[in-house]
Image (cartoon, rainbow, N blue to C red; front, side, top):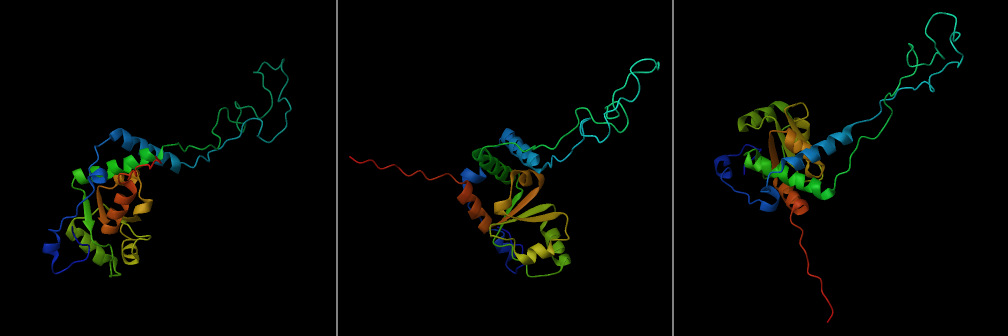
Length: 220
């Protein structure tokens, strides 16, 4: 277990080992599950607001532009025809909902697979806390470079990311902070490295761990 804050006993703290629940952090890698979860998340981000007017929605008269016969030119109807400039659009997009449905258990499995993949790639770190007392961004940037945590997602198990870290990292585009509750599979796939605090580890093991089945009591 590493430490975000520089300490005098940094070498000793690096030897600390955090036991992880194998059901959550040692799940078999399922690329198909990751694909389902990522597509489900990206579909939910689509606005679906593209809209065009059909010929019936374009403003204008329904008068026939020219006679049907006798001009020697192609026959035309009203000015809203899709063939004419300024007319309607044939088979154009209309506002619609692109979101897809995915079972909650599949999403939970995707979270376990994503966390397990980061563990197997040695790309997951655990710190005691994400508290950061320094206000300057440069101090945090130097510490992150010292630890080799560029392009890293920091996840806190608290209700909110610690204010010091959130403010100091707001101008660093190579790192991001999130709470464990708002983390999704897309984040696990997108960011090369992941750093959790102990509260986040406990949150994942509590919400993604194996459910405890209590035996049903029967009256004799």
